[in-house]
Image (cartoon, rainbow, N blue to C red):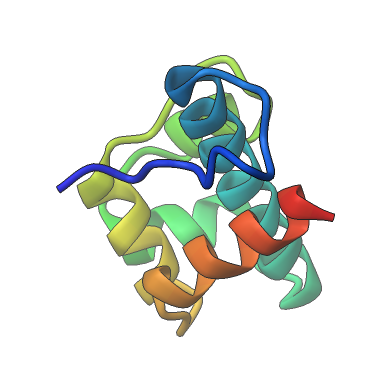
Length: 93
């Protein structure tokens, strides 16, 4: 099953839309981490990924995989499905 945009509301290709959603998910996770005043080192300790990895993702220098996103959301006590829905809503405005 792939995530696909509603063609009536978007003009981007599926790949462009998916990249936009991914970027928005990372933005939302980053905002929540900062709101919690959690450092990248603290996030790393909870996810098992190096703090440098999270930094490169937050700066848009690399793209996280699904497992990394799941661990990241869990570390912030968030539901990744809800974050995906919020990301799509944000982009549809």
